[in-house]
Amino acid sequence: MIYDPKSNNAEEFINHEEILESLEYAKVNKDNKELIEGILDKANRAKGLTHKEAAILIECEDQELVERMFKLAEDLKKRFYGNRIVMVAPLYLSNYCVNGCVYCPYHAQNKHIARKKLTQEEIKQEVIALQDLGHKRLALEAGEDPINNPIDYILECIKTIYSIKHENGAIRRVNVNIAATTIENYKKLKDAEIGTYILFQETYNKKSYEALHPTGPKHNYKYHTEAHDRAMEAGIDDVGLGVLYGLSTYKYELVGQIMHAEHLEAKFGVGPHTISIPRLRPADDVDPEQFPDALSDDIFAKIIAIIRLAVPYTGMIISARESQEMRRRALHLGVSQMGGGSKTSVGGYNQENKDEEGTTSEQFDVNDTRSLDEIVNWLLNMNYIPSFCTACYREGRTGDRFMALCKNEQISNCCQPNAIMTLKEYLEDYAKEDTKEAGEHLIEKEIKKIPKDKVREIVEDRLVKIAEGQRDFRF
Image (cartoon, rainbow, N blue to C red; front, side, top):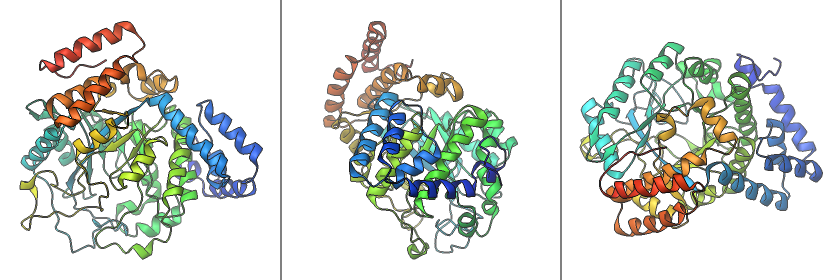
């Protein structure tokens, strides 16, 4: 196979030989300080890095240079996304699955867990519970099962979610994380007005991938790896990537992940809207000794920083798998989105949706179990703006239109005012008193940072209207 980032063939745009050659080149140059400093100078110009340059950085062990990486990653995040952190919540629809993924408790051979699929009425209860927390943006999760979770079920769920308006609550953006599917089905998701289509690769190493997915349709490496291409060909502007760090060797995965971003750029002119960075976590019926490639917090931090340097325009998502301390650290390394009050079980948000024993089966252990309000308060006290904004998606700033603004470091002209206004909505409708006090103090400071007088005046006027009960202003 020949490496070709523009190819339609997964084994050419994620080329095994090219990854091995890049990793070997990186080993040879791991102590080449002049070369590494040149790569960091390039990163500082905010034009991204190649997969080979990323490989060199992951090999670098010079602590002074690693600290420079970390500082650059934080600077780039601020340049592109400011101090905003977008809040999102997963919503699990069904844990029925026909695949045999050995790292996931939903695998078809697991007879321990109670299988559950939400009815539309149960989805309504879940969404109301999420709205009552303050969420505006969801990521739908469902196992792959053509009988229990067909595309028509997913589409019905999306329609139900968008239809629910409880008090001042509304879900304004539904992202979808479901199995690789056909162009026809992606067109249906596009017509259902989804936000981002997210699909984790799990591992880019084909041999490992096939061993980790021994049975079921997910076994097909080529079909899975080319899914984002089909989604974009179907008209879905925004797609999200992710690997599950700890399944295979992290250096291989990092290079593969950057190659995938390069491929989307080369073929479509639009790279990944988001990159997720989950690590393997304990889960039911999963033997942790099968996975000797777990990575330390320090290596994980380095990976986060390198992804930010290599793909500076992407939104980076860290889940509640990680501890409060690791999430705090990640905020300084490039992360721009996180969950709050997340539940990884089907029916986890509403008590009435739990099974007869009062429990539900989680996909993985949640490490950060704080409520959304606790996380909002925590962010505010670190001078981050918890943002519930969904304006770009609803204003048509998606795909190449979003990327053009983002790459030119102009997206903050929209995002900063929208983040302030959606935070104000949260404070009025859902925040506890100390959170509201902290939020109002931060808003007062952030308004002064809006560079255009006219925009600042509009925001100030709208904040008054929000306090009076009006909702959903956006730029």
